Image (cartoon, rainbow, N blue to C red; front, side, top):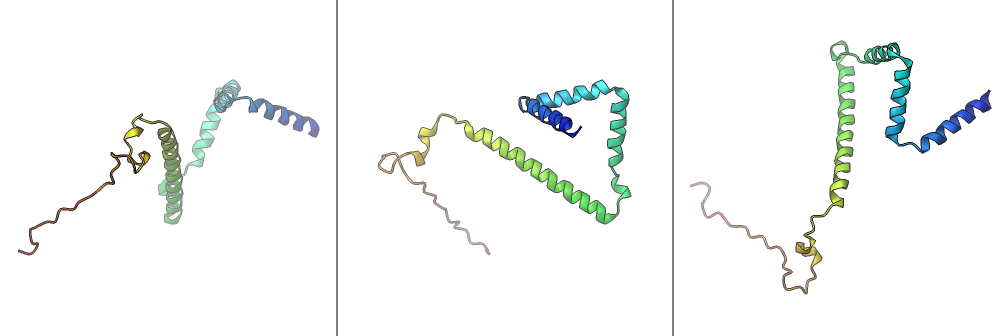
Length: 126
């Protein structure tokens, strides 16, 4: 019996390699729909039972849960920001010729950036 389980698992694994994540998720949803409405209702009730309202938790447990949620959300935002930055950096505007670091120092238009601060002539305690 064990070799057949291993063979089934291996065949299932090989079939999943060829599918995209979206196709795998779609097949998963279809399998659950085929099980019927009662299965989905039981699943919904089971998932709701995992949630505990903040009012029922002690202060220490509530702070721990809030802190872990805060870290999870921060990581999610960082991942999203990294993905966005990767997408943006791949694109160019086409105006790279105006950038000074691409120009050589021998170029007559190559000038270093000069910042001048204007001194305030008014005295402070007057």
